[in-house]
Length: 293
Image 1 (tube, rainbow, N blue to C red):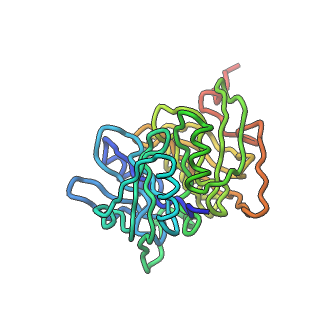
Image 2 (cartoon, one colour; image 1 turned 120 degrees about the vertical axis):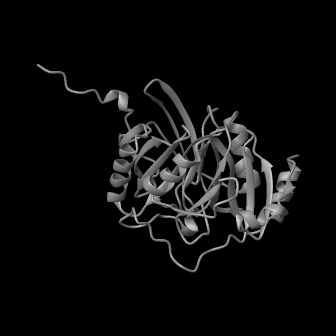
Image 3 (tube, rainbow, N blue to C red; image 1 turned 90 degrees about the vertical axis):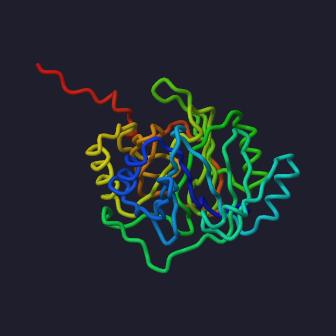
């Protein structure tokens, strides 16, 4: 397998102040590495950083970073497919990695492959969490990206970057047709997923916590911050994650969850599910107040 984990995400946001508060006060991450342009990073484990926040009008994903054991194999596979690959020698310091290359995926998502991510000696402790984040060798969490052609994106990520299919969900959810593929790069059930085209490059990212109560506390902080709830608490059938969804200050979504399933790549058999959730994950519009008698 080529990719070993989701290393980091970079966002271009129009409201840096809102993101600073969101990252620390809602998510419970640590703000680090402030730049002269107002950019900053957010830390959640021993890695120097996991999320980078840059100023700009897009309010969208700017880049996604995947860690690999070496760059030679994936670069050869990418170039064999006619993908233009660039070397990011001038970015290694900013990203805190030993080496980096970059390219666009089939949907135009800026993708970076890195080796040798720097780590802190001191463990991470969040003042907002009872426990901690499930990260480390499992990576930041997961991302759900846009895909103009799901079959093309699947071939690309499987054949050039070594992702393996975990499962598929095909269903109808509150008027929307859902057809999504989920992929693993390590024991985390999925680090990557995509379905069809999205309004933004990123549908959502997930952060997993190691205590169930931290999901509820994060939801309380989300509501207190005035961020719109997108889906109520629920449990997914494929990865077993108990989670909720809400909007970031940039309008795309985040998921906070607990209890995600891990897979053994040597024995795992993909399954197709006919539902998005075992229970819950309702949009707030279905939660109408009780009518007076």
